[in-house]
Amino acid sequence: MLFNRPADTPQARYVIELMTLAYKELGYDVHIIDFNHQSALSAANNGTLDGQLGRVASIS
View 1 (cartoon, rainbow, N blue to C red):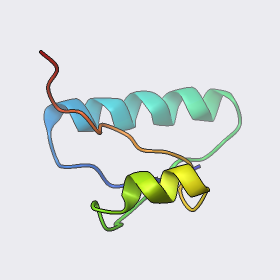
View 2 (view 1 turned 180 degrees about the horizontal axis):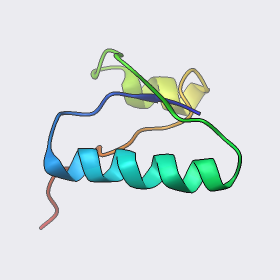
View 3 (view 1 turned 30 degrees about the vertical axis):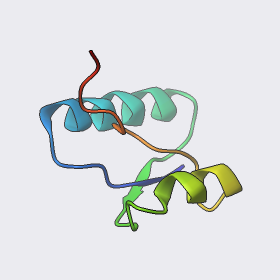
View 4 (view 1 turned 180 degrees about the vertical axis):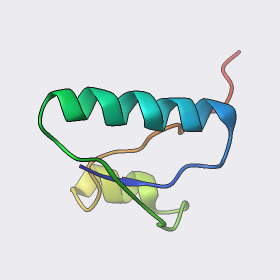
């Protein structure tokens, strides 16, 4: 699984750790790459990336 590197926040680090463990249980490796954040959502939508992790840092 290929994801872009989210901002370095405690929430994002937790999401990366949790998703890495979950995907490992399913037999998949998670790879985090540096990708232009401005176009990452579009890249996830068109299949260049498998998705986004830790996209929203706060929810009100």
